[in-house]
Length: 95
Image (cartoon, rainbow, N blue to C red; front, side, top):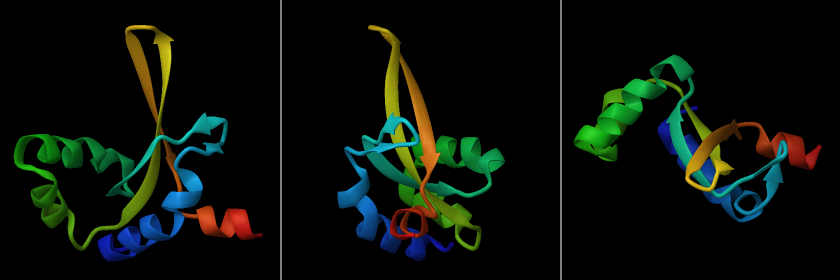
């Protein structure tokens, strides 16, 4: 989906998804990133080094996805971050 479509999806589902368990994980927040998981590290590095707007402009024209972010703790000082693809959330929940 385009970045604009991803923003629209976040706006539609955020109130239903954030705070809800999805695939056994409590979704704490949503974010938009590249659909191609192999490009995620490049996208995240650009976000960290140059800002989110620069990362988005670098990836315009590529496919984006909406992800739900959750965290569990392996021990009190060691978080484990998980992401869940939510692109088909509306199809899943309404069918």
